[in-house]
Length: 524
Ligand code: FAD
Ligand code: SIN
Image 1 (tube, helix red, strand yellow):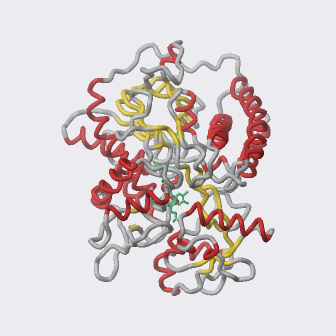
Image 2 (cartoon, rainbow, N blue to C red):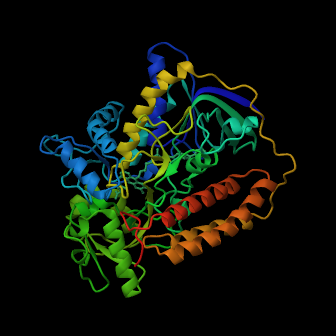
Image 3 (spheres, rainbow, N blue to C red):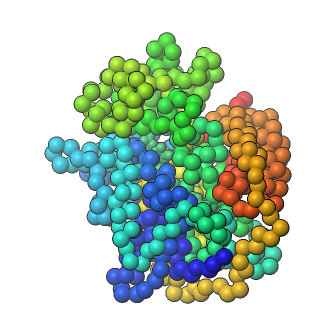
């Protein structure tokens, strides 16, 4: 066991963690002050939800668009539950953050006249999505990783898994959700290569651990998305909210064995594609006057309803009206993926189905990205800022992460001067545990949990299904607790422990919200 001290501990290497780490490190570097920023990431620094983002990043960047319009669209999508102050600040600060991203080396597509080629997605009343082909997230991550990797003040620890954040609880004090002065002192971190569990002490910790998609059987999120940051914060007694608002993307490619499910970007519908049933009939006009470009909750529910009525497993997305050149130019990744499975988008319809995609809630933060635990910040998908309310507007996630990581940076560089490393934090103690040699106990419990959430806490919910989910989850809770307390720590056991907390939080939140709103829809 070893102990590491770092001024700033950043857990996660997606857009939130990378942009924050770079800003903090560079700020002190420019001032000639030596500080350390450590990024830990559970696989490789390139693996994150960010890497897979396709459609783009929303911001008002052209004269004919307006902040008021972006604000209005966000509020409408959020179905009355957005925090208006937060919506305004994110929308108004977005152009400046985009400019910084460009200065850091991110490329966005331009038209022949040199203007940004702005795309449109569901719920947006204007073309305002900056994108780099259909691989925007990968391009943003590329630029940020290049900056971070070469920075003298930043250390990246790949294949390091954060198990728990450290608070007074680890000094033997009783900590409850009501304890007012809870503090974070760092995290216990498993080095996946050596198996050692290290104590990482920090003056400021940022949770930037991303989403929860892997709590469901079918998801667009990569395997890293197991809600670890939210589960850690929950165990440390932070405030968590809006967990019932799980967004299903309407159009994941139907291929039940794919994990993650391959996304067919909403920008394809923005470019003219339409949904059709198995008879080839367009059906979205029955559900919303915006048809295929209604907000995601509405489109996903419409597809779910079509599937329930027809008994089919997928509907079709028809992109044949989009010119081949446009498909190849704007959507090369999607075009090639479809071609690889024998679908020619200029002639064939794409079989699609909704898949778990994005969590609107998470760890509560104020407008400086501070959680209810001192010295602990959160931004990106694991946080609950109030921007999304009951349903996120397309392409508002990457921009939220940027705006909030900037705000966390501004607050953190002030705060760090006053914070000290905590003494007397005990090493991780695993006496009495043994190596679990029946991995099937872990994998099976994970599948059961995913099945429960998918069947009972999916796009359409009912009181009976939610009740059933809670009673099934209790069993998984007990079994996984036994595994966790009696076994040597492994990533799969920790992920199961985190997923069961996520499943519980989503289901409990869904049970407490009696009315249908946004993504939370209770069958009558
Ligand atoms: P992530 O990018 O998910 O990064 C999380 C990081 O935390 C990873 O590095 C992970 O390894 C690390 N981590 C997690 N747990 C631990 C742990 N216990 N220990 C150590 N490290 C840990 N949004 C948009 O705005 N526009 C889009 O076009 C768009 N398209 C999308 C397409 C797809 C297929 C998906 C899946 C999402 C899309 N989104 C889009 C959503 C958006 O990509 C994410 O919400 C956003 O990238 C989240 O960024 P993040 O930094 O919060 O987390
Ligand atoms: C997409 O490209 O459809 C995803 C956009 C998003 O999740 O915001």
